[in-house]
Amino acid sequence: RSKKMKTVAVIHDLAFHMFGKQYTFKDWALLHAFSAQVAREADTVIAVSQSTAHDIATYYGRTKDVHVVHHGVDLEKFHVPSEDEKQSSWQALTHQYPKLQKPYLLFVGQMQPRKNLVRLVKAFEMAKAEHQDLQLVISSGHGWKQAEILDAISASSVKNRIYMPGAVVDNLLPALYWHAQAFALVSMYEGFGMPILEALACGTPVVTSNVSSMPEVAAGKAMLVEPDSTESIAEGIKKALLQERGGGLTNGHSWDVCAQRTWQVIRRG
Image (tube, rainbow, N blue to C red; front, side, top):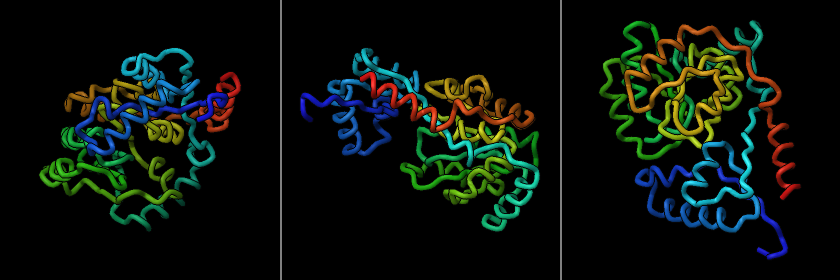
């Protein structure tokens, strides 16, 4: 880049530092080299969470000109539905995904080891003892290193109540949240955790991990659990299943606000 041209870089997460074995060597090496260069050379760095800003300081020693700007969520798409909207959306959902049954616990995200799905499946087994009709819905597109996860599902005593529809089509994703009894994202690490915001915007009770960015994103609106404890996850699920639905999120969580804050950082930079 030209030395006269100032640069602003956005860093989402540094998961490859903590979970290097979950990446191919090529991806790991590229991420290491690129992120180190960005952290060293960019005039201004935007981190998507305080957690990521802390990681930037920890791994690259950079604290100067690092600004936190949270991601937003599409509040027109992800919102608390009207009763008519909820009823018609269930018909559309079950037409597209006929194996979907209420009540269900929902996971949305990539199927990869860091998402902690093996423990989620085991915790679901424990929670299901008190919620016999509960279904676990894993909405996931392409991931990596899925063998252990798929083996855990195949070996589960309640595998007939675990439904994997793949990545749910985009226009039906809000409805998938609307009809979920609760949503679970119990990852070992997240740079942000977009599905947490999506679920909260839809009024869906959330259970999530008490590590990295997840408590920050949930901001007191979710049931927090220890991701390395199946028992803790199971207890969190059971409590979330009994929670009343929330009232959604305010405009402060919109992409417009995210864009405004990003532009403010760019102008200052």
